[in-house]
Image (cartoon, rainbow, N blue to C red; front, top):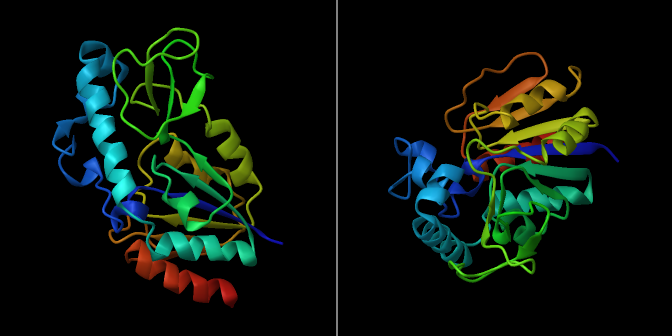
Length: 225
């Protein structure tokens, strides 16, 4: 069974109603990302940051996977599928995908501010005074700007094993995630779905200039050829 590796970004979940700050002049739901997505922002105003992610978590409970998420899940019938996502939502999992790596963390998890490996599931609001079992404040399990991406090495290993690479809804300009395309074999087919693609088709790269939901319909047909 061929190994299909999928890289997904904000465009994957946009049609489910989850907004991306990169479409709005550096603002994420009206907030400067430096205030709500950096260690410095958390140190300066932890209540603001916790409230921001509480709102994102509540929003996540109100949205559903779209047909692109579902189409990806169905590909597991014919391929070994590994999804490497920059998204912090759980829409891939809810659609039925069984092997998902979150490069930038997960909204439905929290971790200790002192012990990076002390992570737990969390579906409700998180407040100041919510402590881990070691007595330290909990924070969102999100990789903020300026922090290391702990899953990147695993993602690189997976890309090196890919028989087919599919990229959906990401500008491929946010590093280190954008560099993952450099680790796949130069001979394998690569498909890129984005409404405003930053690259053109060439050799083994097929660019589909469309939304995630429409683009996945094309991919389903192409992968059957």
